[in-house]
Image (cartoon, rainbow over all chains, first blue to last red; front, top):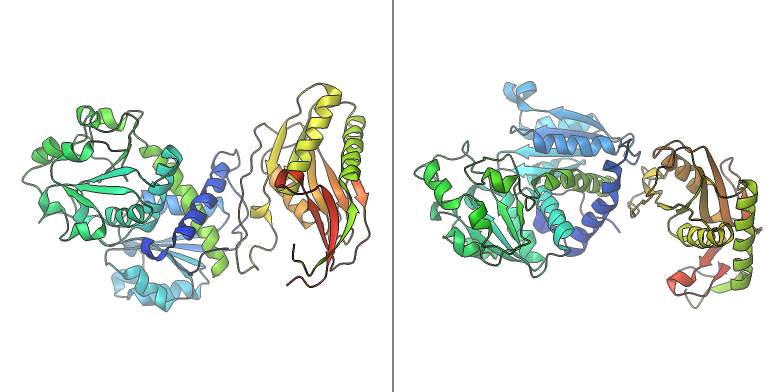
Length: 306
Length: 184
């Protein structure tokens, strides 16, 4: 019982059994969040360091809350406040953190593979909280948890991922894990937003949003990452919204009980209409709640292997 | 069970049933009825016993008894020294424990560490008026100052012996046994 590795670097490293273990552990831990006193002593005395080289509020807060609910001590490092601006390398920063006896390092970095690189140099467990356009495995796990919670299963479902797949680590991790668990994954976006050879990831490609929506059980909207764009940007935001905004009319094309997901933050009126975002079909806030449980489960399971 | 192992039965199904009936009456007697009494079984054996005790008390008292399930994994005192993390199961206590008389139910009372963890777990969920402890078997070898209020049977054992409780709910024949022999 337990996870095989000391780290969580990519979703593809996990076996189906390990994914199930993380999800059932998260399910048991969800109860803690519903208590008056939302704290259990499981990680008392452990130190978790959030090392975030990219701005992120919700992911960092989610990890921080998860660690605190397990009674771990949490330290937040961000480049603007650390010696990185003075020229320190990632590895040296991490070794310094490790010398302070950190048990788990949560890393968000703009370079793909940064977490894997780091994990080779430190004894601490490393959790990848997003590395460039590469992967965001905890987001994929919480999405999976949310789908299972609502649909009872993943196998056989039709799941549509909409938007800038090319620049989305969330999409990459999700395609990998959903196809592994037997879902049919469709991606739909303007061609400039789809990575080359996307079908090799196991996804079916669509270019018209309406076609992709027919028969969908879950629709995952991606955020239009205005800060990352420049080259793949559609001619105008209005054009993108016209063709790819999830509106109430488009939602009717999916199955009646289809759920709508979004990793946040929302661009209301661009990729998702306010009416859909606030409708009962939207499970966007459930994703946030479940994110804390899933990250608690991961930290609990990894803290044994360290 | 491994065929190379030897099993010595300490309590059979009838003895188990009688012990649970006696404990039900003792719980009612001690609490002068079942008003404000709730049962919480410690996963997993304690849950089956708590269910059986609740059914008996309900039969005698003709009223519902709140029943909960407690998983103590997150409160274990060996989490930081174990290599592999034990599986967490669901805690489900669908009522407010504050101001209730909680009877914790476990199958085997041994070192007392499980009960210590359960007490901490319960206290995090509220402030019960009182916590009492019911166990099917007390096998001795306490490492903490903990004592049960209700005991099915006290059984002297050697420290290294393995006491197991088998449950009908798990498709087994109800009994308590000492298992000896090579545990490989």
